[in-house]
Length: 352
Image 1 (cartoon, rainbow, N blue to C red):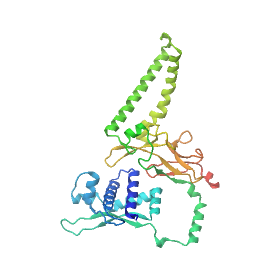
Image 2 (tube, rainbow, N blue to C red):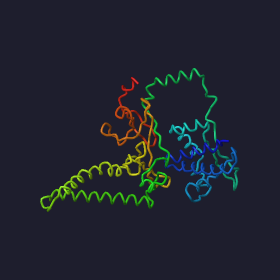
Image 3 (cartoon, rainbow, N blue to C red):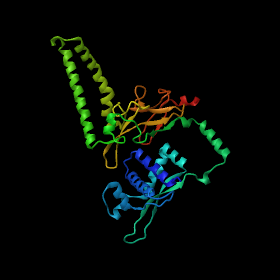
Image 4 (cartoon, rainbow, N blue to C red):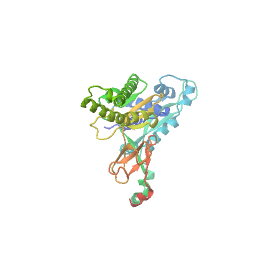
C-alpha cells in the first residue's frame, strides 16, 4: 500500500534540494522533512507517526551547533517555515503539479508546550488534501472560464521555468570528477583544484598567444620556416581567440551573471539538451557550482524553451528561446522567481 505521507515528504525533499536558496528557513524545513522521512521508513504499511522536533533540535540539525531555547524561539519560526512551502508551490509549476497528482501537500504543524521548565514547542510535518470541496465550481462555469482564459492574450506573455533535478544530467569525465551529484562547493579541495586548473590553462593560452604574436613579428628572422610551422601558427592565431570568447569569457562572467551556458566542460555530449552552470550561495554562504538546465514550454506554439545567449537581438546575457521559433518567441529569464515575460511587441500576440 502506498504511503501518502512518505510520497509527499519525498517530493518536498526533492524540490527543496532542486531549488537552491540561501534562506535559513529553507534549511530548517529540509532537515524537518528528512527526519520525518527517516521516521516513516521505520514504520509498516501506510502508518504515520510524526517525528516531533523542538526549535533547538531543528536549529542544531541545520547549523551544526546548539543554542539556548530562548534564542531558538527567535531563530526558528514556524510561520516562516510554512511560508517556504507556500512559496515553493506558488512559484514553481512542477512542484504544484506534483502535489496535485499526489492529491496532498505538506504542511507544518506545531504544538505549544505548557509553560514551565522543560516544556517546549514541538514541530513536525503533516499532509493536507489539495482538493478543496468548497471551491469546486459548476462544470459549465469552469468550461466558460477555461474558454475565456484560452482566448486571453495574457497567457502568451509569461512563462514559468523549471530546473532539472539535481544529478539527473549526464556528465562528462570532468563533470563526474568535480561535480558530485551535479554540485561543487567552490571553497573545497576540488573547488580550489578546479579554479587553479582553469587559471593555469588561461595563462598557458596567453603564453601561446604571445609566442604566436612574436613569431609573426619576427618571422623574417626565423631560419628554415616550414609550411607546417606556419600552418600551426595560423591555426593558433584563430583558435586562441575562439577559446577565449566561447570558453573563458563565459566562465569569468559566471560570478556576475550567476547562470551561463556550460561551455562543454561538464556536460556529456550524449545529452539531448544544452546544460547550464549556476552559481549560488548555500546556507553557509559558500559558493556552489550547480550543473543543471532551465526549460519551459512556449505558450505560443507549445514547443520547448531553453536558455540561449541574448545577443545579438537582445541586450541580455541569457534569454529563453523557443526551439521552433528562436528569434520570434523569446522570453526573459529570472533565476530567482523562475519567471519570464515576452520580449516581442504586444501586437505580435494579438493574432495568436
